[in-house]
Length: 328
Image (cartoon, rainbow, N blue to C red; front, side, top):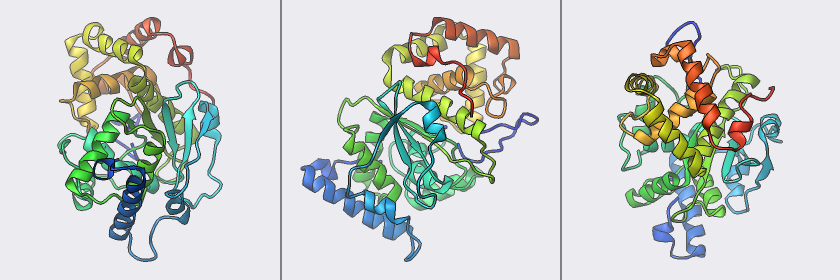
């Protein structure tokens, strides 16, 4: 998810929207050993001596990761007890318990943990069948005009794609960094890497002055990413969004949204990604800093009509009952 300047069509872009079975997880003990070993190797490769991540992140690899069940307002209000820590707060979203929300203390920590996943799953022009090594990821980020901190605002991934990422990293013997290793441990703890697992992981950044991410922006990002989480975990909602994309939008409207998403760096050949991002931007992201209908070739009144039509017919559930953003 990227931010748009209301007075200009260019991106401000202060920061956007893998677990292997230890050689097929030969057993819980070996799996844990592989997680710790992979984390150690990745940490040595990525961080020079004295410049590693905070101790809390490394310590968490040997202990259960705390998860708090919470709603939107509580997630937005929560702050880490140690602002210098790299480890995010983890929430199970109360209205959709299969969605985990990672609230990161820094943009750097969010990027280190999730940027490589984003490149693997949804970025245009990058391979989706293998995991980039660090140098390739850095080159891709530079080519996009971003930094590790500003590559994404928020992230959203379904369990099956997370498992695919980590399996590919194992196959290609790509060393995971500490943030990725921590994420893998979290997913294993929550049984989100098993075949057929239903779940999603989304993230939100902290409030920052540079780049500017205020409380209101975090609320917009969270709602946008939560709509992805529902899409990933609620088959009725996903089917409804697919039908709306295919039958209620005309060819010109789909082309306009696809063009917007392509300019944002999404892989437009991924039709599921197009449907998912279209519902998140068009229906659940009304802040002009993040989405303006003309950028997708839509008139303002046209977009408003489409949004109202979508909301009227969507399946019952949290998203339908809470169309307005909470106060920051």
